[in-house]
Length: 321
Image (cartoon, rainbow, N blue to C red; front, top):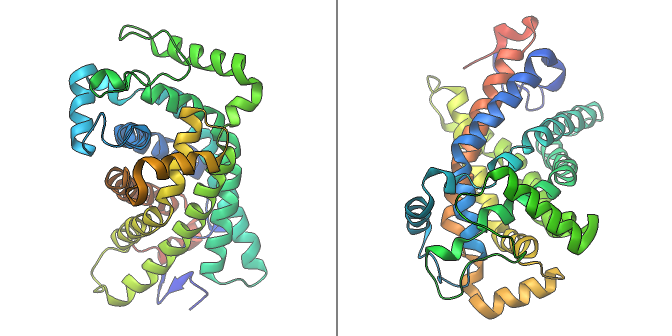
């Protein structure tokens, strides 16, 4: 068996040089957009839970979803979606970096898990550098006016944006970007960049490493008739659960830095600890676990399906669905 790439008569991992990139890239972008569109409401709910003071506005994930829907309907669950969807472009750079670094390390004899760990970290570094400015804008849009749903502290609107339900998404996005530029200049769009790297680089590195680890272990115990694609999707969900639990506090700090405009990670951490104490490790965790498991399952389903569709003809006989 080649190192992690084949198992018996089928390919366990379809490598970068085995695919037709003309098929892979457009199908990958379409898949990424579809998954983000379907799961975006969970991102909005998670972000609002993370930035609220204790349980001032929402009591949990379901309560948040119901209150947002009652107050604003479906558009409220997609607040900031279009600016966030720029992540599809960063996703192309992410996956190209991931697969490219894996291919390069493979030439030096690195094993499957080392390739996945290093490549996942490098891919996140590239992806976050591109997406953080759009992430900052979209998160301000996600929480804009959320206090109107209830709570003691009023609407969450740190930029002082003139907001009403009739405002167009384009106008809100433009007003947020203009206010960030006026207050902080270009640096404002990279607020929380270090926290994003600290949250997402290890998250990405560990997620890919755990994905291949769980895949290998599940294949050992799964009956031969079980779909290989299904095993990969389950492995992706397990990887998502594991990394989410480990990195949850860093993700909360990142969200607080970007939305509440705090000056440093240490300040964000101290404020969070003052508000929540040990509960900070679990704040928004349920929503993030659900989002991570659903996102991981869906991303792997699309990603591995597209790799199978895009594989070069000479490897098709080694594909197992």
